Image (cartoon, rainbow, N blue to C red; front, side, top):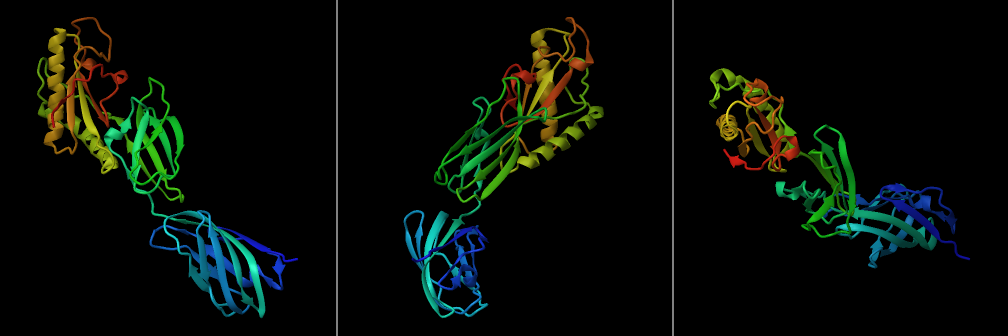
Length: 348
């Protein structure tokens, strides 16, 4: 009865303790494999370093897609290393090979060899601001390689996780629009996300991007009924300008993030007048940022006395209500963060 030898190889690790057949063991042939390569122009490599003299060696292989492949390894001296490329392009495959040859003066055949290979490039992630749809709770991306899976972590503006999702794909071609959805409570606000994209070979790339950042700052004090930023107040805008610029660097080349500036007043005066006054104050701050060379689209809007920080009776002078909010976002800020309308006008 003929005993068949099976070697099971996963990527670069070789099994040990093989049985012998006809006085030639798997260890005598010293086999390993470099099966996981990153670039399509590279090839997986079968590596032999026999402990005995090999007069001849060849492999007849069947690939998991049905392709039949013949590989000639040839003769080797004891201790000589031979690296033989496997003729394969991009993709993930399993191989079953029957080895035949002559080693240590003994002819053999039907040594069964099994190994896996993976050939591919690291996928690049293509995404724009329009691909982040917070209303539908979904992210749409394209990859430069076939799709394996997407992993998404969504973080709220309180720094706590909102959701963690894995979406598997079936090798969709490069450039296919891939959608991954997450769950989120209505009162939660996504502030950033982390995305990892894998191709079928397991190569992956990742990115992390902000989508909503509330910029902390000291409020500018305006003269009553006026909206000019006084020179004495400009220093209060320097720290938020630096923070905004730092946040924009994090998403450069990934997403377009806009700066939204909302203005607010106290309850002194008519409601419609306060709407206009707060709009002009927000626009004045936006113009200051633009004058300083901030590289972002800047939009402003006035909310008057409709969103009070401190609740007061009508016609109450309250400095804490004369304020502004600075928010970076891929989309306009949500209403539940103090922005009741979306009548933004572009300043820059």
